[in-house]
Image (cartoon, rainbow, N blue to C red; front, side, top):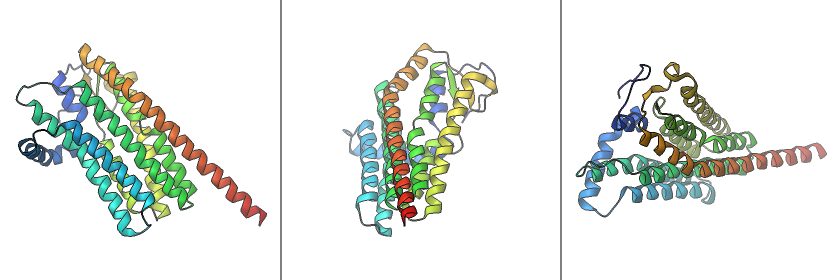
Amino acid sequence: MANYDTANVEITSSQAEATTRNSPLRDVFGEYFDAAAEFINENFPNVQPNHITKAGLYLTYLGAVSLNLLPDKPICRHLAVTFHTIGGSFDGLDGSLDKVKRRPTGAPPTIEGKITDAKADRKGETIDYASLAIKALRRGNRVGAGLYAAATITNGWGAMAKKKAESHGYIVKEGGAGTRVRRAVWAGIGMDFNNNELITDAVGACVTFENINTTFKRLAVIRYGDKAQHYMGMNNDPAFKQEAKEIQEAVKPLALRSAAVGLGLGLGALVIGSRKSRKSQQR
């Protein structure tokens, strides 16, 4: 990945696409996603990138439902993680298939496809952490439930901050292994070890911290420009800025809905906790 660290560097739209959407971990697995996309395009030409995006989201839903409805046994937890992992991998596969589909014409990615992908990300993370919060509540782990509720509340903040920065023409880099990839891994760990309170609390805390930390680092780009850690350059193409605004507006209702769900779960944890405290005092 190119490193643009000079003030007011002008970046083309194609470079912006690469820098804002590719994390180091995606680069590592990119060739495998590309090979799978080539296979799908050759053998199932009617399959479109949005089909892959939606299939991944449905698998994520299935993992969340499995976590809370199937018997509380290791094999069932492994099954939930399997659905979650395959669904998460589709988040990389849909982009590769889109690239393959566009190759003959050289057309750029469509705004509709980007909005669909962004919405799927927000929905998937909301159901991931909401389901983990519910599982923690059912286990009587109020701290873990509260932390996962906080993760649900904040899950859209980083994405909104990124699009806000892009709407001002700033190129914002991914952090570490790619913040969404890292959160997906943590969610998988949280699912498989939800019977362990220490791991549950740690995962909930890490994800919440990641969400908040990423948000502030991306907003810092708007305030501090090239001095900010996540600054990668400028793209003053009006189309780039307008696209960021459109995606931001499309995702905003989902971010607000996720915050409402997380707030409800957090209040639920507080209510259950206060009731249990009163019962223990009465004894």
